Image: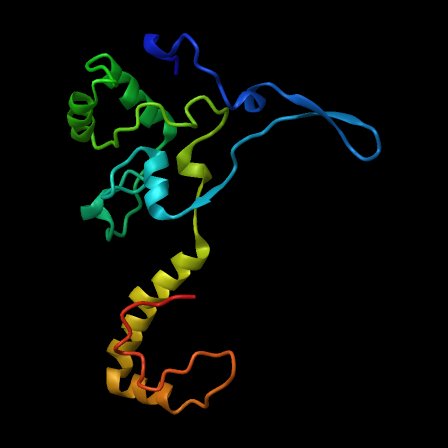
Length: 188
């Protein structure tokens, strides 16, 4: 993607080493060309959506939106190239520095108002591939929203609470003296 005319002067590319190598020397004295591809970026969902230039009700790695999140069939990837093409097409219609007008137009095509994402010129960088979920909070949320809810449904809240109340207290392990059915939030 080439830069719009407003960016051509004075814009410094920060991902130079992804396109042009630099020489590095290993401990044995051999010299190698080193590139810096963007392989993984670990962050929470809201930051992933910001980086992929999609709104809160869209997936940062697929083309699914909020009504399709529960569908069993997978959606096609939300590729960086497709996002950049949409932004480039929008450049011809509205100036990105006209913030109010640009925001109105960009919402119509289901994108966020980011008009120059940091990865746009990074070689081989694509949010559909380099965005990784934050595993700690993702697992906690999955357990609390799904597994614990299923256990409450199958075993019943009273039986589940009784099982947790009857466990012995151990140092370093959380003890639920009044059960778990009333818990509103899980933390690490």
